[in-house]
Image 1 (spheres, one colour):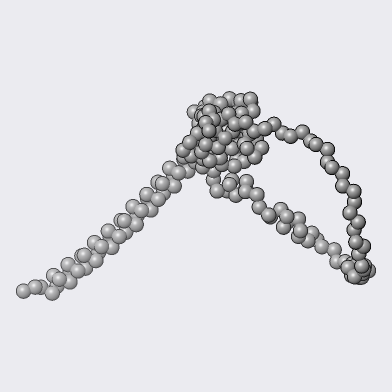
Image 2 (tube, helix red, strand yellow; image 1 turned 90 degrees about the vertical axis):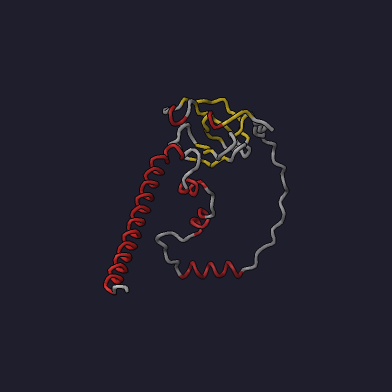
Length: 192
């Protein structure tokens, strides 16, 4: 024979135990997430040269926003006068003369920039930030994928923090004629 009171107490005890297990799991997950965020925040200065933060990547991405911003009306628009409106309508309605092609003059040849001759490349394995100056504090021009060919421009700068940035920064040019800086430890001699 089973005691109904005993069965009820056992059910209540198992419910409380399940609730405590669930609460302790939630607390453990919250603690682990907090620890992960703390470790990630501590590693960001060292990882910022390997993988650019999304904010920097979005700032460097060319968009059509400037063209849209230029086509907007001014902040304090001035209402056109009735005479200006009538003049604009007449200008649109008046016939326009057919343009006569002008004599074309061939442009004078300009000096072509030096041909791109790669002598280094990004070391394989990960993308590297191409920076506007010789420091991890300088803005990122773009993230260069592994094996990107680079032309060395014979400029070097020692790092301010050798433990974090390596020994030397070098100035390079990419195939699309962008110039910037990469750490020496992130490059290797060019191989086709």
